[in-house]
Length: 154
Image 1: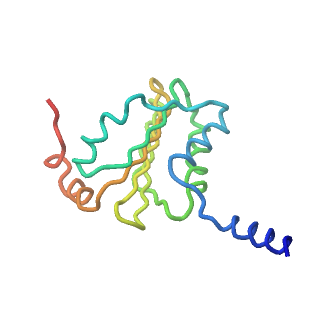
Image 2 (image 1 turned 135 degrees about the horizontal axis):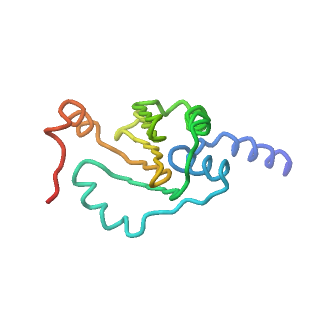
């Protein structure tokens, strides 16, 4: 009886949903390059401003000083979507071969609010990953008129 319960428990534990999003990207980068990410100190201070703008659940991971070669950026371009799974979809891709900079934005819109994952790399700051939730209403407003709907802080 104990062995049957153990087998049942093991089979059910294998069916838990995979953790995706920023944690997946962080693990992929850390294992590929043997580096550790840094968080943003006192990010919690900015969260009230973000939630009032229709954004929430912000998570940021920085890999300061991590320079990604063109060949490795291609490797990441292939492996990030594979590791995120089917729920995440490419939204925007930007490449600057002359500057060695690139950005990927993925969205997960299966539930409200929409989750956005932004992964960007440049030669000065290294690699940064940001995940946030954005309400569909705010996302639609911004996409319809990004200039008019931007926030300016003085």
